[in-house]
Image (cartoon, rainbow, N blue to C red; front, side, top):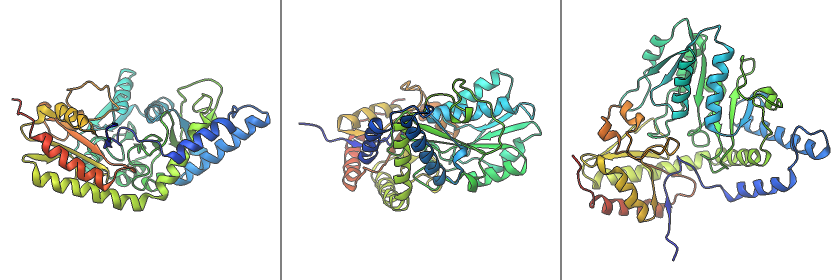
Length: 386
């Protein structure tokens, strides 16, 4: 008999919506041409590509020509930092990122340091929020770019990106935000944020893996990182993944269409879980802001049982519940302390013990109730590790 699965790891990736899967399958058969070909099949592919570009642009307050399709959020983030850095190094070689950025931002920043750029890693408070005064004080005449993610992938904290964007605009500094976790869940608008670059991807909102996009504000000097046939206005050469792009945009349209209703539904589930766990599990504490937080994210540790985090994940998995112990987007080196949890003040031992659960479109009230019941039982099996 097949075991029932309760999937609570939607921040890692989401199940593809059947309507999205159908649109991808249909596109594989109908729009199979190369969008750079001049014949009729290629022209059809080009037309649907540009229609998709326009539809995605409208969802984030952008112009179609400001959207560059990529293969992932990681590629978009790499492209954003490197593209701006190398095209604008004459303006300055100082970059600012937060200490809780996704690994692909932190590792790109580290790589740029080895190329002669200087990087400031701004700390965050215990709630994961960036200090705006610290940001302003870190800006210099040589600061080129600030990159701060809209919402954190581990603890769900939502940053004050509108204020960050305003500060950067006033100081003539480019601003990039990684909105992969927030797009489709809460409003994301490039103009409201005053972003010069903004990253989104498909697989966090029930779209396909292997598709992303980067908003690049019109007129921004930018150096491509892939050279070839000149696709995507020469900013990202590679034959476009038309079926994937169609699936991405369809998933984004559905997520944005249902965003308000889903926000209310998922927030209700989140609050029910937090209230129940706080009441029934001794020593539990929640990581990140409980106010400025994505509705689908919960991250917690249990005092004295942090060393049992991975065992708890495995016990839950045996019972059919999928959660994570940190970010599945990193190197998956089990047992390593989370850089995000350390940045909000946890010592390395406690930072190994974070459990993240993340809700999604297919999460139900029954899932929530069953999870609460199961985790209460599994916690009783854990033993403190000193």
